[in-house]
Image (cartoon, rainbow, N blue to C red; front, side):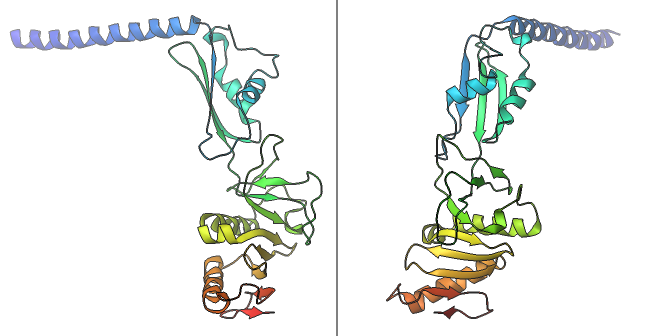
Length: 258
């Protein structure tokens, strides 16, 4: 009997302790919800070198250009989801988290878009058409240009990108995968300065060293074709990079030069 009493006493103590904990948490949350938003803390991921937006831009977006201020409002009056959706609506922002810290600050954690390439709306001769163009990210989405910052990424051109909203088709994904491959390899990232894609999907690459035009063909078997070109560079062109103007990789197991 005494053993049963000790057992129930032990569990009763745990229940009381848990109830007290819930009450304390509830009181703390109630106090925080009544606390005013003292300051706005904006955290932007500048580690990648991208600087599309700054704190002033975020504050304008967050407050709807000052029409919906957050300073001085109680936390319970601030809809975090509404603020997050408002910030995410900006195409230069990939993700956003909005929350309150224990000091009463409203914290906005921003992840910027990280473009892989920029379509410059150019002709085959590389003539720029004003500010026409957009960035392309790893998902194949088109991102608007920024007046504040120009990302140092691969330039792409050609009719393949015109009149499209994204690159989510199979052919589009192949082009995006090729752009990613060129950007991840240190040699090709330095060597390829522009990628032109025709309406039918044929790729031409313009190079920095040697100033050749590489007729790549479809954006298929990218690694194998570039390995073939790298071997050709090492064995044939190492002594004279200006030896040829055109290099054709479209034929299997062959490199045709002019």
